[in-house]
Length: 122
Image (cartoon, rainbow, N blue to C red; front, top):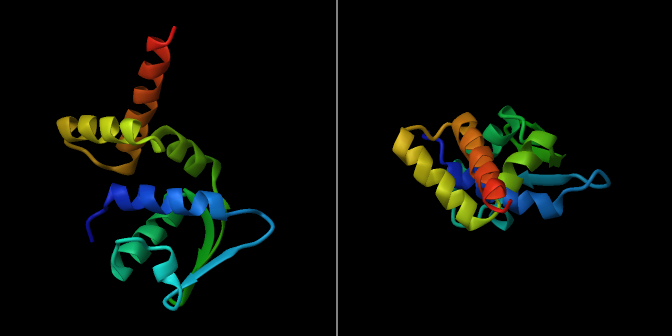
């Protein structure tokens, strides 16, 4: 499956307000529709697994379910940089120009977009 950065962003935006160290979130084939938005089951679970693999969320997973504890510091940082639609759209615009939508590249671009915005405000 092709990586969809918009789906990664959607998952992080959805999980951030729901997670805490006090209680884990369980997502399986019975309740995934509460979390997947407009994404298909296959696309949602694939990208949820990528969030784990890329160390954006603390989670255990199997074929049957995901047990999600929280976003990682890396996940919080990435989401913080792309949370605003303007920043995300600018990040994707630059990624399109350079021809790479890898999560590493998107993270680097987003950091630079934020840095440029900070510089403009001084």
